[in-house]
Amino acid sequence: MPLYAYQVLNKQGVISTGKLEAENEIAAAARLKKLGYTPMDVGEVKTSQLKQVFSLKRKVSLGELSLFSRQLAAMLNAGIPLTRCLHALGEQADNPTLANVIAETGRNVEGGMSFSESLRAYPEIFTKLYVDLVKAGEVGGTLEEVLMRLSQQLDSEKVLKDNIRTAMFYPSVVLAFACLVLIGMLLFIVPVFMGFYPPGAKLPFLTSIIVGLSNSMRSHWYLYILFFIVFVLGIRFYIASEAGQRVWDRIKFRVPLFGSLVQKTAIARFSRTLSTLMMGGIPVLQALETAGPAAGSSLVADAVRKAGERIQEGLGISEPLKESGLFPPMVTLMISVGEETGDMPSLLNRISEFYEAEVATMTKGLTSLIEPLMIIFVGAIVAVMVISLYLPIFGVITQIG
Image (tube, rainbow, N blue to C red; front, side, top):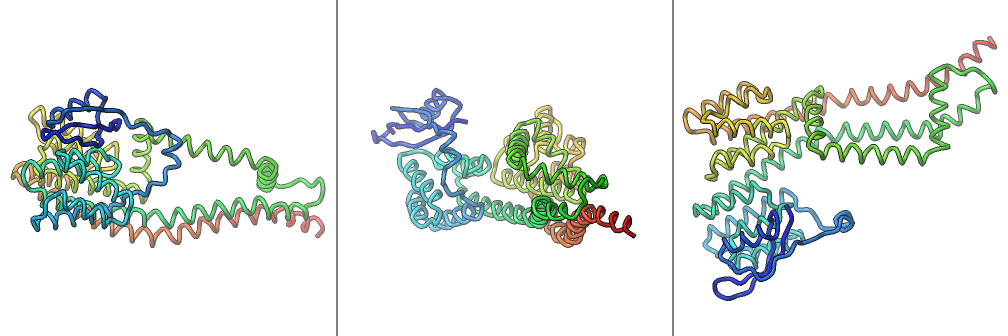
């Protein structure tokens, strides 16, 4: 949704400014009136695409956001007013982006805006999950507990992401190295061998392909670079679309070795998020709307959305999740038991802990398994190149013999 900057007059007659997300200018003004303000000026914050591309804003990491939540919870628990907490945390934050956001949030709260509405203006930092839980904490008077729970959620998410990054790092590096070796051989090694071949000699089929590719790359290198850029951008734009995201998710779930890891990661995220939301007092339907997309998979999000529709019909969550085929029987059984006993948040938390441990174990196993496979892969590429280059030389030696 677009971001709108506003200038309002509060009940005490003090003018304050800030930003919030809304569908349009009228919706933004209506939300401000609902909060008890008199809107004086509301306008959309427009950022050019060029400015977004070359923006040097430092991103806020999960670790930094977790630390902020934990520190804010501790200060509120000590009886310090929210505005003073925000000013202090804004001054001591190492990340300038987070420091500016905290300071502006503090000014908005001072002006009479609620903490959750102030955070909603920064969706790139504070997710819907974060804002919804903070709002529930404000309404229920349990903001300190909610912030501590959010800190734990963010820590778990960070560990999960680190495990996935660890599993993907080695194959990515080796594949990049293999591509560089292949390009280097085609550009610099193949031309040297071409000088050894007799003029007009008939080359083997494999050697002809390698020589032709080398000549093409050296004479039309700019076309290869252009093709690579267009291909990468095309894939990225397609994956960013709704249809492309679904196709990409299906591919990820079916990739040998990594498919199971991706599935368990999505289940762990969904379970942890839903547990956190329900423990924070968020209604089940609203919690499912947030927990589905938070899983990081459009397929899981679709299954969760259908579960929400079934709840509106008076049915349970476990059955539609089971029908999707994405959730193992153990998960759907524990959710079913949680629905029957009324202890679903606790059981979801156990599911998330189990699958987070599974992801950590699989990551270590995959790393040790992939290392020899990738070495064999790189060796095979080099071997094929060397054999194809030496075949004509062997043929000449055989003819001379």
